[in-house]
Amino acid sequence: MVKKGWLLLIICFSLTIQAQYTEVINSNRPGFSESPYSVGTGVYQLESTLFYRKADPVPLFSNPEAMGVNLLFRTSFFLDKLELNVNTTFEKDKIAFKNVFESSYNETGISQLTLGAKYLVYQPTYADKSKEIRSWKKRMAFDWKRVIPAVAVYAGANFGSVLTDYHNRGGITPKAGVLLQNQFSHKFNLVTNFYYDYIGSDLPEFSHIVTATYNFDDYWSGFVEHQALYNDVESKSNLGVGAAYLFSKNLQFNASARGTFQENVTGFYGSLGVSYRIDRHQDGFIEIDEFGNEIKRDNTTEFGAKKGFFGRLFNGFGLFSKKNKTTTSSKTDGTRDRPTRQRKKAVTKKEKKGGFFSNLFGKKKKKDETEEEKLEREVKELEKQIKKDEKKAKKEARKNKKKNG
Image (tube, rainbow, N blue to C red):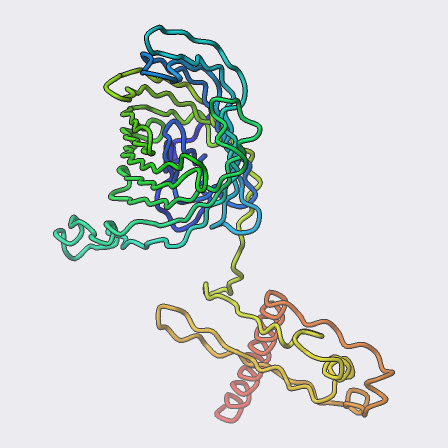
């Protein structure tokens, strides 16, 4: 059952956030546009769409009717900012020829196969207005930094040789794009895409997509989208609306309806979709001390770290090694901690440091204790010291009492 605490950060498109990975599924569907953000490392996501399109034939050759399924697979392997994806469509097309007479035939097969990658170039940061308690005006004022969008670049390749004859534009052709996204509020977002497709072919194509999406609550969201495509032969566009429902944090359902426009001919496009992800993402962690301060370790003090052959050799023998410096941490609220008292044991002859051969053939040193073990040891030593001080104070009090008596 879906918890109420989950926020629907993205249904149609991802929101501008400070990390690529989101707790709920981050789907581009049912829209045609693409967010600049990736799904995050360790996430394997499949976005499927069943669609139907119908319009009146236009002069000469056209594709007035089609029905099929679109599959988009997304994942990130190396970096959270880098996403790899495969976009393919399998459909049944009605190919029409309209001149003096009108004829048509059906063609079934793959109409699209694109392998692509996108990389987040710029990610804006916004002020947290909830922390503004001094001025209501500043708290409610619009953050003009939100006008600056997140930016990603896209590069892909179309594989035309495996497509049907109507959709084949010959060989492998590149595709390039720029992906933008503005988060004007926690609920309203604007996604803009610019693509230059089929580069180097006989009919290269330029397109742009503008999508406005709004989150109604933790489960439902809707969008309005406009897409336009241009080449040397024709221009076409579509205007659509849609909605998405978050069923669980890894499963989303969506639907859309569009009007298509091509050479004064209008048509209809409808879709139903399902997006699902396998979440294997693991967050990194930061080690902190008892005061909440980040513990920064010097990796160069570890054995063999950033040292040459003789450096590692002398490090193993204990030669020319510096004593570890002890650092103290203070509370962030400015209060002083009571200094700890430690009682050091006198060094006996057996415990005295030996020479070169004693270090070479002697017993191995004990491993460095952890921060937790060190803290426990210091607490025990402090308790012992306090008990000794109390006994000493009692003895002195008795002596003074006898003298005065």
